[in-house]
Length: 572
Ligand code: ATP
Ligand code: MG
Image (tube, rainbow, N blue to C red; front, side):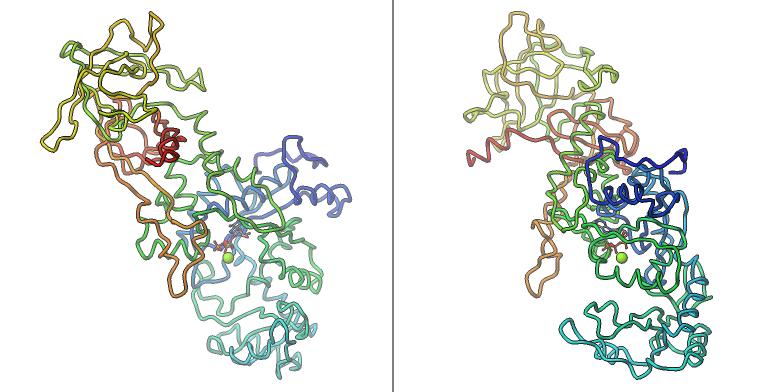
C-alpha cells in the first residue's frame, strides 16, 4: 500500500495469518529470490462492466492483503478491452468499493494504457512468424478449431507471408475492414489438447468507440493477449485469478516467453460461491434491469455497495474472506458463515437501542399521567467506552406484539395475564388485564409497575424469567424498517428447471417493509450508514432514504432467535 514504508520483504508469514497456498508460493519465491530483489507486485484487474460483489472482495483481499503482508505493491488495473460493455459509472463504483473495503492501490492503470505497446508487440510476433491474419468466418473458425476429443485443422490463411500479414494487420487497425471480417491469431498449435493453444485470437475488429481511447482504435486485443502483457509491463510477480483461467495459463506463459518480457506468473484460486446467492455480474445486471431489485445497491444484492447499504462492515467482510481462505478446488460457502462474521463484528461496535417493530400498546395504570422518568441505558456492554444514554419512560409504552400472549404456550415466559416481566433498563411490570378491539384482538395491555425495581433491580431478590424491550409511546420516533430475507429460495440459485430462468428461484418474501416501527428518540436523526443493535431483534443500519425525524432502517442481520427455534422444533 502507498502508505507502507518499503522495507526489506519479510520471508516468513506473520504468525496470525492462516496459511494459504498462495502465501506459501510467495514465501518460497522470496526465499529463492525468483524475482531477484524486486518487490512483490500484485494487481486487482476488474472489467468495468458492472459493480463489484463479495466474490471480488475475496480477490481484492488476496491481491492487496498478500502484497501488504510482504511489503509489496498492488495496482488497480481496469481490464477495459471490451468497449461495448464498459462504462465510467462502473469504474467509479469499483474505486469507491475497493477503498471502502480498506485498500488503497499503488498504481492505477487501464489495459487501454497499453494498446500502443500491445500493438507493437503484435507486429513483432507477426514479423517473427508467430502471428497471422485469418479471414475465416466465425462459423468456419469454430469448425476448424476441433473439439476436446478432436484435433483442430490449420486455417488456409495460416501460412500467409509475413509481408502480407503486416499489410493486412495494419489495414485492420486503419479501419479498412468491417467488424468480424478478419482477426489476428497467434500461430501456436492446432493439434494441442489445450483448446486455448489452438491459434487463439489476439485481435478482433470492432468499430466501437472506447471510453478512454475514443475512436483511435477499431481493433481491440482479446483478454488473453492483453492480460499477461499488462501484468508484465507492471512487473506483476504474482498474478492471482480464479480457477477457470487455469487452462489459459499455458497461453499466458507463451506470449510472455515469445516476447521475452518480464516473467509474471499466474496463480489460480477458487472462486467464492455462497449459498442462496448469485455471484456473476451478468446475472446481477439482469436482476437490476428486470426490476427484481431496486438497483445495484439494493441491500439484498451481494454487491459491495448492496451489503454496505445493508450495514455490513468492511472488517466483517475481510474477516470472513480471510477465514474462507484460498484453495485449488471450487466449493460453496454457507451464507450463515458470512452472517456469523457480521454479527461478531457488529456485536463489538454497534451501540444498542430499543425499537419495537410491531407495536402493542401497554398502559401502566399506577404510573402517574404526564410523568417521564429518564432511565440509564448501557450503550454497548461489549464496549465500556461507549458509555450510557437516557431513555424516557412514561405511562404508555409499546412492546412487541410477540412479547405478549393472552394464553401463553408452554415455555413462553414473556408477558401474559398475571405474569411479571422486566422492562429492559426500566421496571418490573405485572400484567393485570387486556382491552380487545371489535375483532376480538388484544389492542391494549394493562399493567402495574413496582417503583422499587427502577433500573430492573429486584431488591427482594425475586426472579422474573423474561426481560423485554419497549419504547415510550409519547417519545417514540416513527420509522420505516426494511426486513430482508435471502433473495433466492434455493441454495444454488444458478440451478434452474429446464425452460425456466434463474428468476424463478427468486424469494417473493425477500423484502418486508414495516411501515410504522417505534424507535427510542435517540434514533430520530440517525446518520445514514450508522449501525445499531436493536435489542433482541438484530443489527440495523440507517438507510440513505432516511429524512430527519423519520428514519429508515435496514435489518443487516437478525440476532439468533432462540424462541423461533424452540417454536420451530415444537412445530407450533
Ligand atoms: P463475474 O463472473 O461476476 O462477471 P468476473 O470474473 O468476470 O466476474 P472480473 O471483473 O473479470 O469479474 O474480476 C476481477 C477479478 O475478480 C478477477 O481476478 C476474478 O477472477 C475475480 N473474481 C470474480 N469473481 C470472483 C469470485 N466469485 N470469487 C473470487 N474472485 C472472483
Ligand atoms: Mg470477466
